Amino acid sequence: MNERQAKWERALFVGYTAAVAFGFSTQIMLKRKVGFFGGHVWWKEARYLHVLTHATACVLALLRARYAYMLLFIDIGLGILTKIWTSIV
Image (cartoon, rainbow, N blue to C red; front, side, top):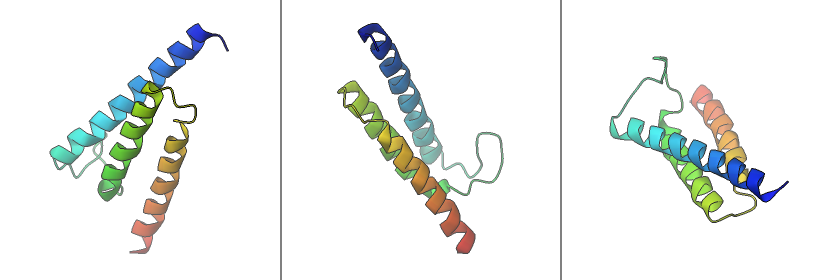
């Protein structure tokens, strides 16, 4: 992969993770109980974790950490565990 492509991919990743972190932060501040499309939000309590993982991945990508994207896989795992937990409780 050449340097130009790496910069482009990093910029896309930073933009995506920053937008998601900002979106979830806004939903937390507005205390929204519905999702983007108006449906039930089972992950409402996990929004803080989403903000934390996406914002941290964004900062790590800005610092050129090689495995910043791995935090998003952790976020997916946390989402799955949250879904299981909310289904049980």
